[in-house]
Amino acid sequence: MTKPTFFKKPPRSVLTQVAAITEAELVDPGRGSDVITGLASLDEAGPMHLGFFENLKYIDQLKATKAGACLVHPRFEREVPPDVAVLRVSKPFAAFVKIARLWHSDVLRPESWFNVEGIDPSAIIDPSAELEDGVIVEPLAVIGANVAIGSGTVVGCGAVIGPGVSIGRDCNVGARTVIQCSLIGNNVLIHPGCCIGQDGYGFIFSGNGHTKVPQTGRVLIQNDVELGAGTTIDRGSLRDTVIGEGTKIDNQVQIGHNVTIGRHCILAAQIGLAGSLTLGDNVALGAKVGINNHIKIGDGAQVTAMSGVKDDIPPRGHWGGCFAKPTRQWFREILVVERLAREAAAELKQEREWWRRRR
Image 1 (spheres, rainbow, N blue to C red):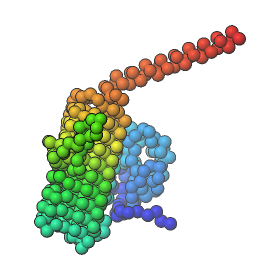
Image 2 (tube, rainbow, N blue to C red):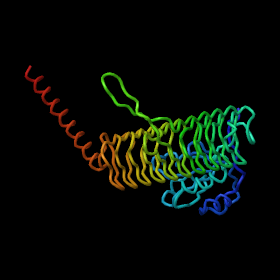
Image 3 (tube, helix red, strand yellow):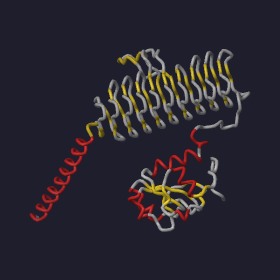
């Protein structure tokens, strides 16, 4: 059976074309007419595939690859098998992404799953909603009263848009996404299954039960934001929950009420952000990071995956661990603990040997 694919096939291209697109130097000009029909990882590539190498972790895959051509930094050229055409470039992955974006432009922005043009007859749209020309509403979507949606936006199958929500132009609202109490900018990509604008976790706790605190704020999502599948963003309690321009959020991230996320941040999967914390601009959080409420993370800070943060992090700080601290300090402490463990194990072994001899 032919390997199935869900996206358009790249055009057949010769290596001179590939070199021009990627701004790479074809080391052997005599191979300029070799044909490339697709992209692949080094370990799966065949003679008509283009691959790339940039991470030393995959050096063995480079040495064994059957790719037709490979984008590679000059210092690793000698590791490329002789049958593989070398495309010399200073940033191989960036060059690979450049050609991938050109050949697979249909992947960058999700299209209608059902080839709908306009509004599907099964969609339910309140008469007071205002949809600009060019909006696509897929089957079984529900759009509430006084909703405003800009041109070029796609509302996915089964999505529910609550009353008063505003969504800008050229956005994608994924299937089964639920949005309420939110104002969303332009070119925002929301993957399926997101929940945006529901009330946050606010209670007065007592021995006789827990009193719910009204959550009357909003969610503000600025332009060019991407939200991964299954992500949840709580609306603010009094002030707004804000996601800054250009921020990219991975799957299954929980963002609590009153959180402010700056511009161009990167949040990996399964992060949990407690209420009322603030991330500056260009902050990067690794997968499964958890951050306590009312914390401030400075501009450009980075937090290692699976870290727990209970203290403020200064701008450009690199922190990790549980509880998180400056990465160098954390590594030093790990090394000390490992050394102490080895010494304790050696002492225990010596003690057991001494008792054995006493017998």
